[in-house]
Image (cartoon, rainbow, N blue to C red; front, side, top):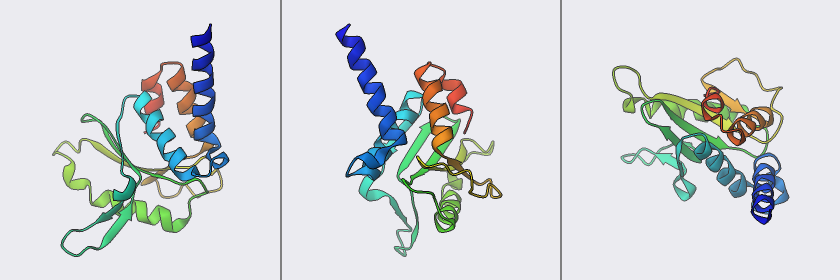
Length: 162
């Protein structure tokens, strides 16, 4: 019984970190960790970039953009993820479009892995224009769906968003 209660407590706080990270003083870091864990639960290998989040061209030191997490599922998907605890703005979306271009050389002739740029936000981002499909927005509703599928053990369905 005690083990079951511990598990329920973990799931509760994990969900809070995903959907309400602002309850912590380090909300950005808490949210990034929770997103990385969620992606791991559905079969991705994840790397939190931390202080390496700014992508620079070595020769010029030009900053191409910024991503918080790289998630990979062998020869299936390479996810370039930015975690934003607020509603993402146009500047952030444009930055994410530029980041994808610098990873295209990792694809083989068969265009694998599929490179997907995603902004995760615990906010309701329904009002954001979905006109540009090159950057996906995983808002509160999408995160809740992925979380539910992950907790049910349905990783394939959870990955279908990407």
